[in-house]
Length: 226
Image 1 (spheres, rainbow, N blue to C red):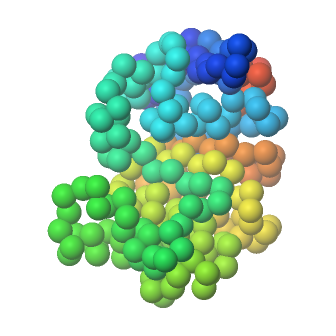
Image 2 (spheres, one colour):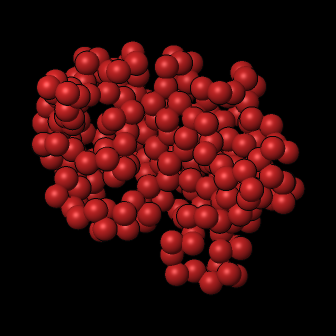
């Protein structure tokens, strides 16, 4: 059994009288500890699939099992708890809270758990240290470069020690040097810390860092390259 199993996974919604299906009967297996890149044109279903795997969205039909747990029938309240324990999400545009410091942004996900202040401090300090920002903990997003903001976003995604990290165009808003540093960091998380990594990207150079690349078009898997 694969760690992540999708069977006939479909996401549909109505736009007027038209039914739009960003994903159609998709079958996919992802092994634990894999670094997977998802590629395809805009509208191909990449981000829809990423959000289903992250428990942010729910499928219209089909099956999605992660670690043997069926997500498609899970109540939303339990899904939110599962997501907080299992998923770290890295957004393209960082999604940092501008009035919070780097430390406070990274601390945010921990507030959903029953950690003491001392425990939160230890986890946040470790996460910021891992991304090389131990000396920027009291800086606000406006005081950081784009690459540093993305590193704060990565620290926020890993602070709770999630099993799965999902990343939506993590280098899309970065220059070449910052993009390379970001990908080196994600590769380290995958290899050293054994995180299952699922990443959406348009950039073949970024995708090349992953162990495997899947191509989607019109909501269906069209190519599978190891």
